[in-house]
Image (tube, rainbow, N blue to C red; front, side):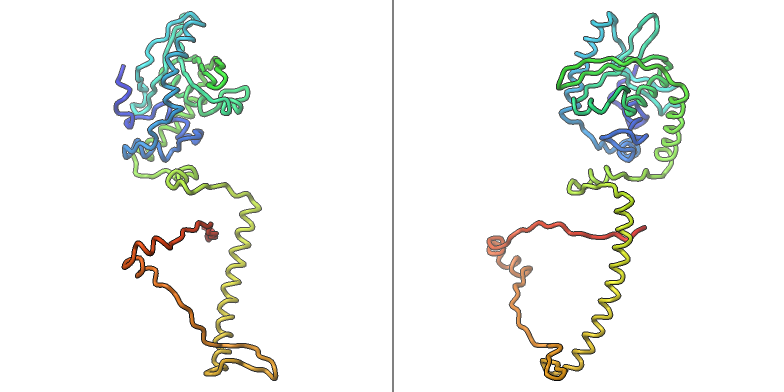
Length: 295
């Protein structure tokens, strides 16, 4: 048994698996890499995780009462016999029909529970299979509580050797490439959004991608036409010379007349009269539309 609060960056735990596989809605593989490689903790917890921790003993106690069993080892860390960087921290282990069974506990909101359907979500399933693989067990009880409705449920999960070993193979490759090696995982949309709260990304469909290409081509044509426009304007200005109007017969076809504008040097005003500047300054927020060149 090991202190589970220490050296979490030295191994991949069950809670990391879904993120590394790209199945976690709240955490990315890039964030796991930051934690393991650079000891940068990207998530300190929130109200939901705090309530989850507080309710876990209550849910386990209810499970013990319903099933007439005793859950133990719910503060232990286990390391794979095959790979010392693969581990798990099970919520508990109990004995049912003379067989040790893994216990995993989750609290879930009503909104999230609506999307479960008839099967356990993959983000939880892969964690359970990883933990079974590390522990060398063949059965798990996934027990959960739907917070809003207080609905309690149990799901029995059997060890899927083929699935668990494929997950293990992926985790081993990921660890060797990104933690032992010097490669960096590709950032996802979620990573960029977390870095800048003002950024909210959405995936383009085929139509949007095609229109983007068309817009790039149109902008290139406009740039070419703008260059031609400047050449023609300079030619006509040369014809006007020191005059103000260019005539063709009785019609004025172009003018080039002096205009006087009064402007305020805002930089100088801010430096010399900061209070006056702040008194009359106004702040406006607008959205700037920029089109990126395709890579």
